[in-house]
Amino acid sequence: MVRGVAILFVIALCAPPLWAGSLSLSRQEQLAHLITQDCGSCHGLNLTGGLGRAITPEALKGRTVEGLQTIVLDGIPGTAMPSWRPLLSETEAKWIAAYLLEVNE
Image 1 (cartoon, rainbow, N blue to C red):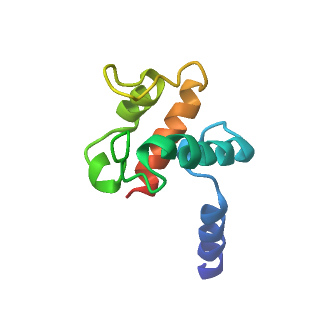
Image 2 (image 1 turned 120 degrees about the vertical axis):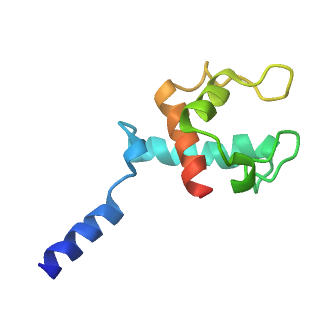
Image 3 (image 1 turned 60 degrees about the vertical axis):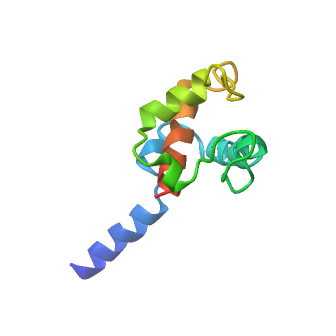
């Protein structure tokens, strides 16, 4: 019994997060790189803010995946936050939103 539980634990650790959806591991790696490089160019390499707002754990408290997904896709009018809709699918934007929330827990 203990061995079976241990095997399930190892499988769970190796499995992609549930929010990864149908994105390939390669695409997930590309999106993580995009967060560091492209998002980081405005939000700061540590995501603590710069031209764009901070997207740190404190700054994201109370945010939802759906809300962040909308911001990623449509931007924030009147600010430097652009719409990424021409470049990202809804699934990719949802992945980014969930990644930010999970990484920042």
